[in-house]
Length: 157
Image (cartoon, rainbow, N blue to C red; front, side, top):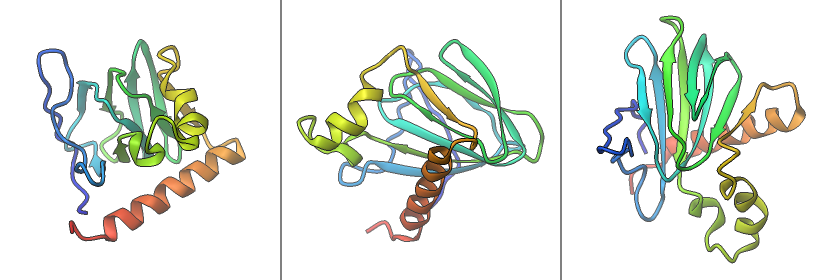
């Protein structure tokens, strides 16, 4: 699976119309150099993991605005409006946009009940910021980047 730049196309309700991955493997990997593009306001049914790999970025998620710095990351819940803006010309982010079914399978599975449902089902929890100060932040970043490497190395078939 190739890495692509995020090109957001939305409908009149600001829902992104791009399919991330495919029906068999619903995940896409993006790498964006922020001097090239801002990511406009949009939402989608997938979860999104973003990590800043160089510089810093400004995020708008729901009604919150904040800055993420190199090494910091965020998981944005499904259905939440969000946008990314450059702070410096050298800012780079990597992201994985994936449907919860990829991890959880069926809503009756233990994976859905234990891992996805507690976050996904809470509209008052639009995101989780991971600044790297907690061990679990570092573990999530490690595993997400490891998954990204494996996905990127695979062919489209």
